[in-house]
Image 1 (cartoon, rainbow, N blue to C red):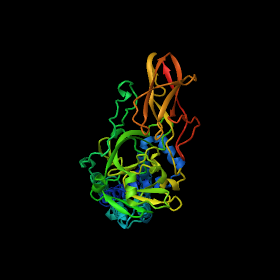
Image 2 (image 1 turned 30 degrees about the vertical axis):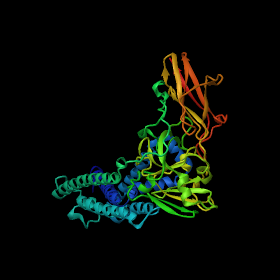
Image 3 (image 1 turned 90 degrees about the horizontal axis):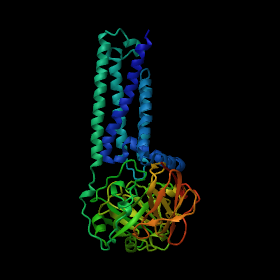
Image 4 (image 1 turned 90 degrees about the vertical axis):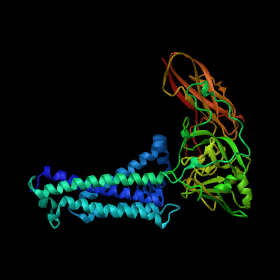
Length: 523
């Protein structure tokens, strides 16, 4: 008879075999994916499928709750579930090895299906999952064999066969072999996974690209209010601080030498451009504020930058747009699609295929080697990153990623204002101070910003420099703060005279609306 104190550690050892089998398999799969396609790494491919299958309300709730940490939390969740299932596989393999192996095979199959069903998948994308499966099964069998020992291979009950006195040499030897083997698998997995990560991260170097000068340069950007009002957003958002919201769990690494942009669909003359050919076309430089549709009232998913690129109309005119198209369907290198109303990109706004940001090439994170920029439209309908194809088509014929999920097809950015300083719920000293922030109404322009304190009448704020209708405006209001708790609200009015909407709306399906009102404590 075995005792509970002896059985428990052995159960833990069997569970550990499953966990280590999964970890080793995923590490090898990650390394293989670095050579095939980094996005096909098992955890990443499963995570991407989870994103695609997640209902919109849950997806928006995750972004609202976790912000830019949503992807890390998703990957951690996928990893945790995998580890728990792998531990279960190890436990079951104690008496029924075939059941434990079956669970490992099912986990690998899920990863393989997730990889091969991606929009741009090829048969090679199955290789990481296959490598994961082979290594996972081999490690599970090997570690299990070390636990059971050579003398118990045919025993009906491993516990009865091996749980002898602590001094039994066979048991002691098996224990030492297992610990050494487990440590070796762990170390090997760390080395292999690290190598895969380094390889996956080293396939492009945007900083080495030399951008040509613009044929039409932007006006010099005036000095912003950030030098006068502490805590206000910088007039130009540094590239490193620019928001990132997308569906990618791994940032695509694209070589400019192999990249090309295809223009097809309802056009008279389909053609393609290499990066060098694109950069030799007349370039324009424009100051444009971009906003994510997931931005809540008062949120931070907005940024302003100087963009360098080719006018979209120059590319479309060269192709010769047909008479039936009403949609520009843009495709990223990973098959992700965005639909932009054709009328919007041809109405005179400075829509462009951008290759530069704030005086430097695009970074991998922001779409290198090229991305779409459409002033006045939320990013989900006009800002495709890692752009590789422009297709002229109709909304009736083709639906993009977000259109399939019932988001709006035409989504102009709503007029809004945000309080940057003082921050909500902060405590400040009584006396002269300033309330400040930013306001935006892209493609219409900000006419004025108004502040309301403790429910009193709206009063005009001072506006910062003007960089055009497609760029945000900084604002501030001098305030003699008195002791107590105060409610501060802000709203913007665009140049047409339209006042920011007070009615509350969630980001889905066409952007949030409402007035930001915060509490400030003066003490």
